[in-house]
Length: 329
Image (tube, rainbow, N blue to C red):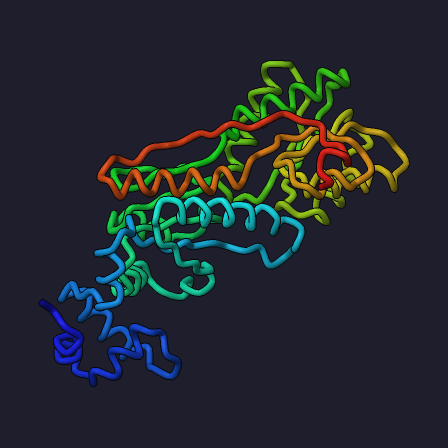
């Protein structure tokens, strides 16, 4: 059986240094960390504490990799609901999850991340907040070294599943509903961040809807920012019949701008966040059950642990008009 002594010998360092690397002690050089992780990977070493955990009733050990948006606090509600659902379901299924922020590993190559996670006994990944710009995560997934579930990313392979709602259909339906209710023809669509997978689906839905209903469609990118959506609304909304937004946060920015402009235009959002109930206006939106999405991501990860193939999982959503009394507890 491979021991920590074997790792120390292979990497040419003291046993205490290997222990420091395994326990993430500070003041260990990157060069030393790399040598130790390389030895761990080559020897397929599993630390005793991790081996004990894996030989118990636990169904697997997963790294929950999550991105936080540093530009706003308003959408942290979504992230926290994802986390709550995932962690609660992991406890039910005896899956151990350890949370990492993507910023903690963004400086590492995919190979370095693989070595590090393997050295810590992880055999699964749950990724929340991945974008098309995260090349290192794409490489990590393509390596198929881990059972992986991506939330809101359309990526699948033998060992990778993705979990989300049907963003294309949801965007099409909520936009069509609001347009018909208000008899609109000229549409301003404020899209989310360009590097998000869901943005592509939602923009594609709006283009299809405009073609199907013979609408005049203007698309501008709001970068999922309340401020940016506000600026776009000030600039373009006066000449449009309706403002449709790819997120509730942007819908709030658009509605506040319209109020300042002292003009009425129907606005609809997407997500169903609690904040929507406090804006003073009732807007159509797509309500996602983020906690349920997180829980189902863990269920899917457990299925992958059991040896089944990756797939795309689409979950239910609702078309709603949020009221203040619907959100207070």
